[in-house]
Image 1 (tube, rainbow, N blue to C red):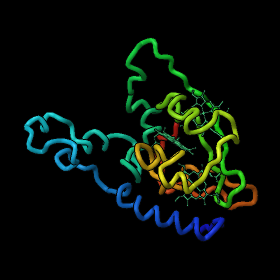
Image 2 (cartoon, rainbow, N blue to C red; image 1 turned 90 degrees about the vertical axis):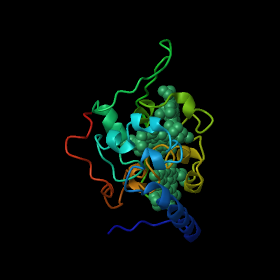
Image 3 (cartoon, helix red, strand yellow; image 1 turned 135 degrees about the vertical axis):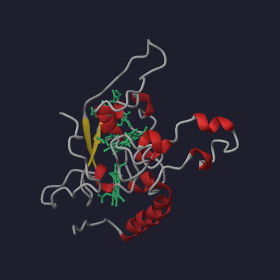
Length: 194
Ligand code: HEC
Ligand code: HEC
Ligand code: HEC
């Protein structure tokens, strides 16, 4: 059991409260069938033509949170091969640079990896309306993230949920207990080659 020092009781309480609401959405054990997802019409005969999420997603590198797929690894291992653009003239920009955030807090440091993000996203998805393209220029806040701003615009909505603390807080501080083991076991051979 590792103990982390949280800055203030109020922040801790707020995080706990937010996680209770998040839990019901993000910890679903199963994939919702199409006829129960509230999007597809269960009475339509066409629904039988569509592949069920469980059939498609259960074949990919598994996760224990969110929609149960380790998406970055599925992409890097070639399990999926999404089209990068619709128009051939779109310039694909992949940026390989990590930014360390939260250098002063009590939780482990946050490593933001550009490369893994720009495999899916273009710069304009984040710059400059969410984050300035300059280290230290953005004022980050875990509370804002939990409220669906900053990293929380995507994490908890379309990418892995905020309950996976140590996937972001992944770098131990000097003198801090070594990086806590990830709450998810990474399957052998699934770690992308460096
Ligand atoms: C999507 C990435 C992400 C996830 C997941 C995440 N955090 Fe954070 N967290 C951040 C960022 C970025 C900051 C930096 C904010 C700042 O500079 O104050 C931060 C800051 C914090 C802080 C304030 C600074 C500190 O270290 O004392 C606390 C406390 C915190 N996070 C707790 C948590 C807990 C607990 C969880 C899991 C329930 C969690 N975080 C999950 C990205 C994340
Ligand atoms: C998912 C969001 C996201 C995407 C997409 C993204 N960035 Fe960033 N970028 C960040 C964050 C967060 C920071 C840190 C901001 C801070 O410290 O205030 C940052 C910082 C930067 C910095 C300054 C630090 C460094 O590493 O050099 C540059 C330059 C930058 N981004 C360029 C880019 C470019 C070019 C692209 C597209 C190829 C891109 N970013 C895509 C989130 C993103
Ligand atoms: C515009 C959307 C978006 C924003 C904003 C965003 N992310 Fe992500 N992030 C993604 C997507 C998409 C993935 C890949 C899918 C997944 O792992 O769930 C990802 C994956 C990650 C990963 C895992 C990389 C891996 O190798 O598995 C980390 C760590 C991460 N994000 C941290 C952050 C932090 C910290 C912030 C805020 C500074 C942030 N993200 C903001 C969309 C976003």
